[in-house]
Image (cartoon, rainbow, N blue to C red):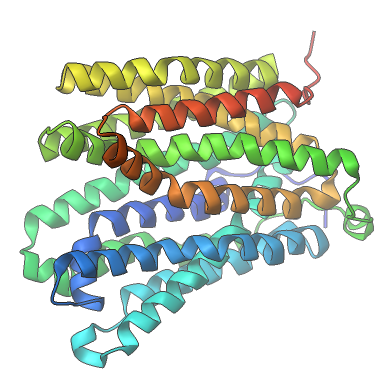
Length: 416
């Protein structure tokens, strides 16, 4: 193992961030094809019950994320970032391909939903363990002064993957009949994403190791300051996660709550995704130059202030003229500040704890708050009868997140 790995090539960088990208691709594909997946694997007399069973199985993957963070994350601190990354991504690919190839209920009966649930639980476990070692690797492999930029690639690729998933979903929905979508169209969409798995595994196997033998042998027991940092970071990441997963469903908000057409709602999703692709690297680079705290406080402070006015504008002037600029502003500010939060966490931890602590903290935040964000937003909208309910939920979460960010010390030594 080498303490000073060589500069990574672009294909190697792509292989490192492929896991995070595949997560969001699969997330969007599952949402877009929830109805045909339900018809194939969870057929019931009531279409709504079938859809609920499908979404419940999808949500079950969030339950095993903390377990993946607890098991695989610390492996990245003990045996190295690369072995942990290979294991988590290989398991992720296996579970996605397994789900895509699961025979229908009509073919194998009750074994179909059971297999779907097992594969979904395995996928959640793998995803929970993926974030810690890959983010630690990116930060440690980054050239001097570019840690924020490298970590930002995790988030830029997740937006790009969401865009890709949306395009694939729309193309297949337009070309295939409902019967074909239910029979095999959704399987094709999943396999398109899984096609990157073998190539990414080959490239990951050739990566340098960034964990030194000395760091691997040192004690990993957290002290009181690190435990407190973890608690504050969970609050920060919870606010980021709630905002992220709420904005992922902006197309549903546009169509169901605002009454706009499906193409208009999908356009908001695409525009928001493009904003994320652009602003994530910009946010990472700014945090390298200005420091982590100014960027995350500025971005999330502004996001907290503008979320409610944006939703008010979208609810009052219902159309693309307010929907699209709001999507750009909200997604752009979110993407701008997220890399700084992750860098601040990882730079505050010693190398022998980075993978495990980050994996556990991130998995807990995403499982508890990401897995419930859309449900809570929808329930609040139904309960209050107000289209502004999601904005209130996001704003409250962001306010708590900003307060937590104030407690974190600056981790970048700025060059004069």
